[in-house]
Image 1 (cartoon, helix red, strand yellow):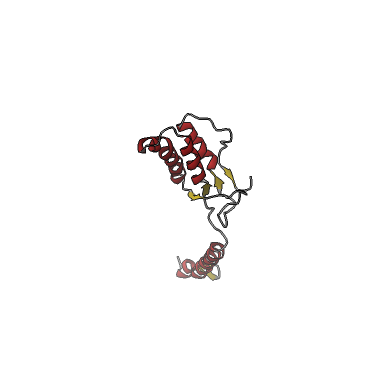
Image 2 (cartoon, rainbow, N blue to C red):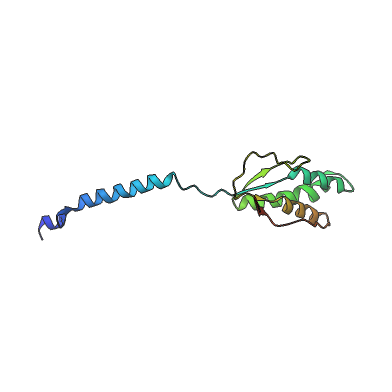
Length: 138
């Protein structure tokens, strides 16, 4: 076998093909790195209003009752979303329903209803408007 057959693919050297292929791969990688962004996983809830409403419904207020009927159900829901890789944002609304978050990505989901349902379940109550988490704009 001749050395020229090992080094050349026809009249084009293998090294040239390797350099052209690596350059094309690198150019594609650099070009796409700026255009592809990972989808963020964000949920939000109006936690303060839910806690306030639930505290008003409690018959007795002690650390044990608050732990069992307010903190634990809320932490369970928040940890569920944390395990799934979500970022949880605590929000607040004024009387007109305006939220105090400046911007949210379109894939953010509202878990206020789920938190409300968890607290109601822990306290033996029913919640009419406990809907599953929904995306912004739904």
